[in-house]
Image 1 (cartoon, rainbow, N blue to C red):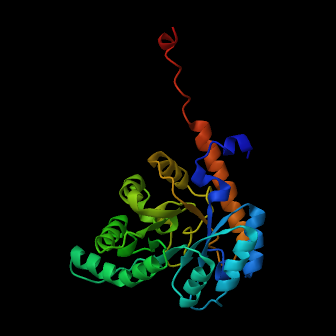
Image 2: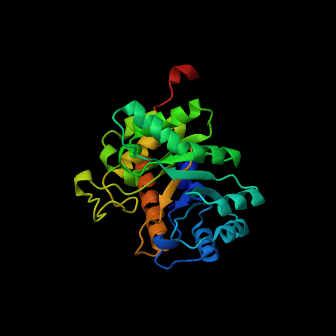
Image 3: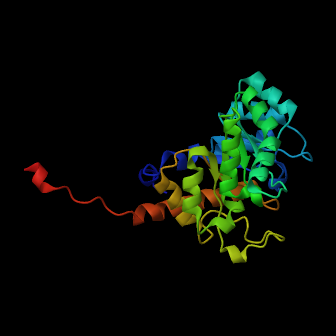
Amino acid sequence: IAEELRAEFPENLQKENLVAWCVAHNWDAKNRNSAQRAELLSELGLKRVAYNWRQQDDPEFEQEILQCEKRGIEYFAFWNEHDEAFAGFQRHGLRPQIWKTMPSPQADSQEKKVSAAAARMLPFAKRAKELGCSFGLYNHGGWGGEPENLVAVCEELRRRGFENVGVIYNFHHAHDRIERFAEALDLMKPYLLCINLNGMAAPDSVDEKTKENKILPVGSGVHEAAMIRAVIDSGYDGPIGILGHLPDQDVEKSLRDNLEGLDRILSELASAAPEAPPADQSILR
């Protein structure tokens, strides 16, 4: 894509500002180590990473930090919790966002569900605050993935003194909100810490059991262009991520496909933008 056209894109959609998300461990068929991953991101021109870690993954916390520092990559976020990782952040003076999946509590009223979810997330919000980090409620389906509930729990935690709490919103966990995305975005915008993009197929073609059509490269779906336009039109200027979220695929291909697809969409949106109205000549007289 022409650099002059790329320069017209919002700052948060410039390649060097995008966040590479779900690029470690089981999301990479080549299972790159920290050094190889940082080298790949650097080669692709990506300067920010959100590190995904689960109990079954071998921790590489210190190396992940060191390799990011070596390559000039911002360690932007950490998904999950681990004392060793948190200690590393303190040693290296890092304050990444901490992401945690929002729960879907069983209760007989909305008020009780919000209270229970806030109570569950409060210790994590407190720990993140002690580290000087923002804490993101991560949508992952169910009650806890609905924008209204994410916002309600976020507001409840803020009322309890945790102003560091916000919302992480993932396109790939929001197929049932495509038609109302602009409305949801408006509701979440004051609290958004990051939006992660995805190719969005028609909701009735997404199979939650087989995951068919759930994860697609940006630009290969049918709805993400309109959703990205809604993000731009909303004035949201915060962080935006792209996924490497396909376990049987080389994460390099996943990221390249997303970058290329995003470029196509942005180019099309730029081409479709209405021209500025002609100047009022009477003002010039």
